[in-house]
Amino acid sequence: ARTESELKRVAAKARELGAASATPIVADVSSLEGARAAMGSTLRAEGFEGGLDALVLNHVVGFWGWLLPDNLTSTEVGELGTLSERIKGGFGKVDQIMRVNALSYMYLATLAAPALARSGAAASGSGGGGQMIVVSSAAGKLGLPQVAPYSASKHALHGFFDSLRLEIVEKKLPITVTVCVLGNIDTEANRKNTEGSLKYAPERAPADETALAILRGGAT
Image (cartoon, rainbow, N blue to C red; front, side, top):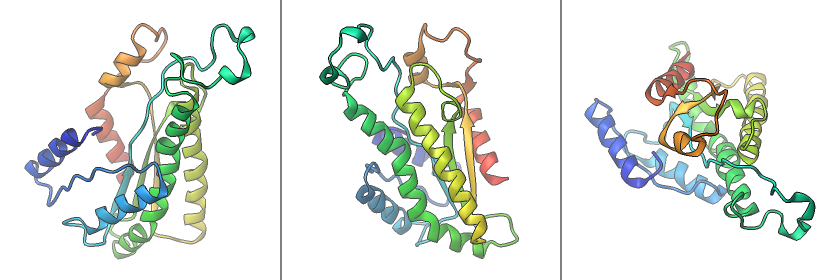
């Protein structure tokens, strides 16, 4: 959910489907302070009481467009990265993408690690608890056109979480790390951004089926 109203709707639906509790928390996690506050609110929420069985990281700022201007040879250095039709927000947009899509994942995963480890230890042998699920993209495995800053942020996730997984294994911590690599998903934002631009892309995967695949992947 990307808006407070949508988040509340999802929480209400979760309770309707039988969730023991569902507490919507609105937060800006692009800074360490914001991420720390969000994690604190989560662990204090009804039904958590300081515990955390699974952390699913699936928030993103998108980007679609060429990074460089068409008249590059006649462009002055000072003009690059400024507010333009190609980079709406200038390099400030790139900074936002890296903070939200990469740094916030690193913050939240690190902050959640103690609670996940306790959960994993308590569930030892049962196959539950201590699950860290990271939603990435095919753009994090290879470069794709018109998504350079987005692709960079997703590459950062693979480097960080692949390394973190090795540290978890070395320290014998009861936490699993699953990185989900998504392809072309059928969302409103994806359809709007890529309309008329994708000539050879695979068929879009339904969003609900993708969500179930993420959960299955994290549970196995």
